[in-house]
Length: 390
Ligand code: PLP
Image (cartoon, rainbow, N blue to C red; front, side):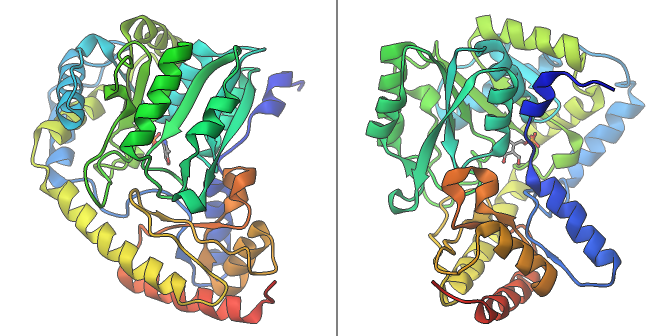
């Protein structure tokens, strides 16, 4: 078979590869604590599961409109408006199988060869992968530990050229857990408006903020015409396997993204969409309980990491990731992640898997029980103890 050149441009998400490696190791009898994959370990709330069953019984087993069921688009518009304090029309909403397709479709719709897209680094690896895939040039925007993993607005200003077609933001952020402060969002919005550059704001962790309110750049002045929200049900409602996400965008872009849906998926599973409706309109206590537990785990895990010589971990403000600095240890982040898995039985991801500025860090997902997190901490400490320091 001869493959199209563009296939060599497509990257991947290492979490899925490490998961396979960790499972293979488990099959040999080794005990592994899984801190590699970014998904809540909680069950989908019961009433959401019941709504899906009911939908199946009611006959939601057929195609639906490509942009999503009208009642779900309306509920999403209302929820996004309520959560962010803005106004949203249902016509701006496109429902997709997970939040990831919004990334793919929006980059596909806005960028082409010769264009530049600014994206966070370290950041979710799919941004860079898709930017390359469509033939555009990825322009990394460094996120630095000394700035609590937010970006330097002056640095961003310098990265903008007349060829910049899109700026991607992610807050709360994967892999660092960092949050973009409201003042920075305002400054970024001013840059975007001045140059007329759309901003794809990946807000998949918007309900996972530990202190204070969540702020969306889309509420800043002038962003109504340029702001694109990516959000979904995977993280907030522990529904990763259901494949349910959405984008909220100016109508003219929604038309293109909907056409991309028609050309690829036809539509998102209709009974899943009915369950999503129940998630949005039903009780929110399960979300609050999950976040309370994530906070306890964050505190235990980050405190534990900071007691290990050679490891320094900033307190994440959101999501469920810890991103410790391990640059004092004399291994690359990939070698260290591999050593922790093979020797210690702790699966994590190398910081460099999130981009060049992630070297010197590891990413742990603390979506695991407190007992397992404590076990992992002991194992990490033992492993690090056996390694040399710089
Ligand atoms: N955006 C970020 C930053 C993520 O970390 C993830 C998943 O890990 C997604 C988007 C995609 O989520 P979904 O499962 O809804 O496709």
